[in-house]
Length: 128
Image 1 (cartoon, rainbow, N blue to C red):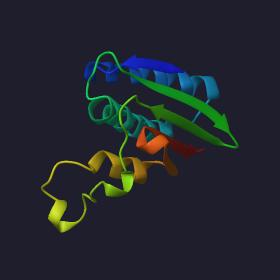
Image 2 (cartoon, one colour):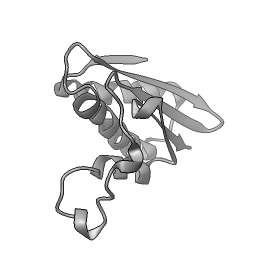
Image 3 (cartoon, rainbow, N blue to C red):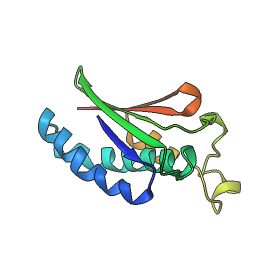
Image 4 (spheres, one colour):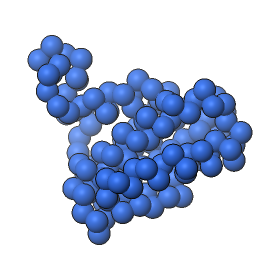
């Protein structure tokens, strides 16, 4: 488990954490870029949008391996959101707008994504 204060610079902690997970479970390094980008987006969203960069709030990251899948659960202490309301950044009316690209990337780069706890928790799954 990793617990970090909601300070954007703390995103840099993810690389070492993730490399340790890959070493522990002997995961194929080809999977690393997709996992790193997805986790970076999820933690960034939790810090900025979920916890509103409140240094007194934390983001918690858990990982577990099961049935040739590595799963990551990222939770924040914010008020939550409805992931179905995130605009599709590939739609013509949203191409030049900010927002939604991180969630879009997480959907594209992971094998499964699931939100719970009113959007305060996201679980990402990667098959290997």
